[in-house]
Every structure is written in C-alpha cells, then in structure tokens.
Length: 204
Ligand SMILES: N[C@@H](CCC(=O)N[C@@H](CS)C(=O)NCC(=O)O)C(=O)O
Image (cartoon, rainbow, N blue to C red; front, side, top):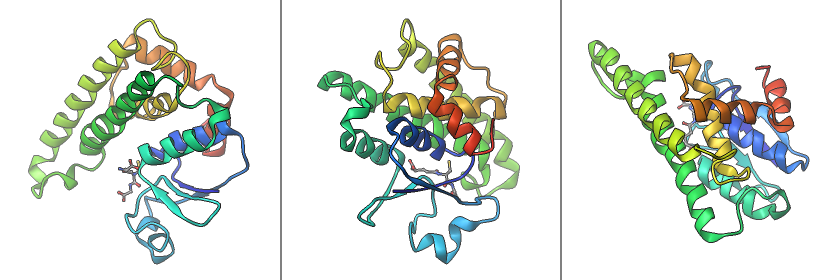
C-alpha cells in the first residue's frame, strides 16, 4: 500500500491509522505548497489533486478521508478501528464525517484558503472569520460528544483519527480547544502510532 500525504495535512489522520494497523506501507510526500498535486505525475494517480490518496496493493486508488478510513478499518478487523456494535459504528461515522465535512471542509478550509470561497479579495477576512466560527462551533459540539470518554465512541476508532487532525490544526488559526477536545488531543498525541507519524512527517 502507498499513502500519498502532505506533512501536517488531513492525510495525517490516515497516516495514523496505517501505523495503528502496523502492516508495511509506503508513505510518499506531496509538496502542496509547490503545487505537486496539480502535476501530471500526481493527477495520473488522483485527478482530484488531493491528499490523502491511498494506492492499494491491487493498484486501485481510494480517495476521500472517510472512505479510506472505513476501508482500512473493515479490511483490517484485527486492528479494532471500528466498534462491533452497529449503533456505535454509526456514531463513529457520524463524528468522523462531522470532523471532515464540516470542521475541516467548511471551517478550516475557509481559514486556510479564503480565496476559494469568494472572488473578492476584500471579503477574505470575513470568510476567515466565518470559518473560525464554524470550526469553534464544531469543537464545542465535539467537546460534548467527548464528555466522560477517552475516545469518541469509548475505545479508539477511525473517528478519533479525524478529530485528531482537526484538533492538530486549531493552534495554527488561534483556536483554543475546549477541555474534553484538548484532553483527547493529548491522549491521541501520546499514542505510539501518533508519535511515529509526527516523527515521520517532520512535525515532532
Ligand atoms: N474531501 C477530501 C478533502 C481532502 C483535502 O482537502 N485535502 C487537502 C489537504 S488537507 C489537499 O489535498 N489540498 C490540496 C489542494 O486543494 O490543492 C477528503 O476527505 O479526503
């Protein structure tokens, strides 16, 4: 398996899942700042120009964080990345999708790339402010979901990897994580798989 990732990007959550699974894989860095994602070498693999991109052992390519995380969990059941109970599985997917589709794609994306949300440079500060509001509301809801729990659905699952990557970005945009999310972030950071990924991505 080969993971195309960018250091500190959302792909870090998938990188963590690969380390949790513990099977051999190759990690290939894509330099987003230099626009490598738009070069033919990369678009031949993923025409969406996005990381995470996972090339599986049969050569097929899987994109979109939730799809990759779900496939990794289901195809490596020994790693216990999804609970057995169907209701808890649905809760894990619900939280993962909220982190990816709302907190990342609506909240952080507005703050990192405001020009993608308005054609007018003068509106970019307002776009960033809106993005921060969305992310802060998201963390407040995650805080409630994490109350009294070590991990999103009790024990570690794919939901935690997504909550981890959005939490990892909070400091960059001046967001203070609420208490339960901050404690979850500390717990995640202490996991040996996360430590290895931080080192590999040059972020330790
Ligand atoms: N919906 C995609 C989003 C992936 C995404 O936005 N990746 C960012 C990095 S966090 C990216 O590759 N950006 C490069 C670009 O847009 O040029 C997913 O869930 O995987």
